[in-house]
Amino acid sequence: MTEQGTDAWRQQRVGHVTASRIADVIAKTKSGPSASRANYMAALIAERLTGIPQDNYVNGAMQHGIDTEPEARAAYEFRTDTEVESCGFILHPTIAMTGASPDGLVGQNGLVEIKCPLTATHLETMLTGSVAGKYDAQMQWQMACTERQWCDFVSYDPRLPETMRLYVHRVKRDNAAIMALQTEVMVFLAELDRRMAELTQRFVKLPAVTP
Image (tube, rainbow, N blue to C red; front, side):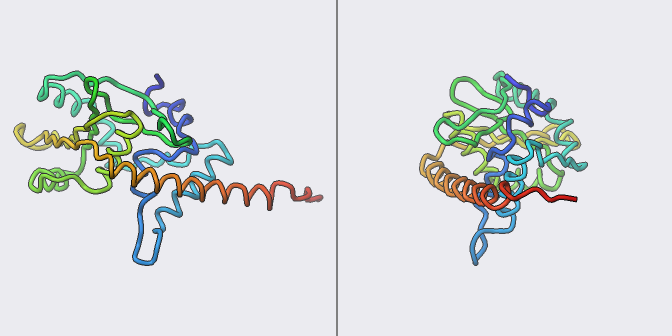
């Protein structure tokens, strides 16, 4: 297993549609596909052509999540009396060039997805008892790749009083939603392949420019 967050793990994901970006794949506006979808496709094309990961930017909030995740995982294990098994990048069983990196495997059938958001976001999640659509899509894709049956969405904020720090919401596998996502991903990948072919045909065979 390649540890998540390492250079080797980032290299494994180069050019692949990942669960954390599924929301961009399916993003649409009233007039059609969104700019985020186009930007993600452009980034994947760049990765395939250069072999260099494009998604390396980490802001303060993201770093907080990275730093706090081990504490959140321990709190989840204590609350649920389970052990979370680490995993690397898991390829989709039937669709090439796509995969997922769940935050952990739980037992034989489960996953866990951990978020350590801003305090206001954490409290809103607790009050509404719901999971944002982009995270639901991410977890459904993780379940599609790992062939598991449920994923616990974990929101954690150590800055709050102890009784409010951990929120757990179980999301069950939705086969209809997964089928719809798989269709969207295959359409996306087919379009990406066409653009790659066009670039190759138009520019790779150009004559060298002499000084």
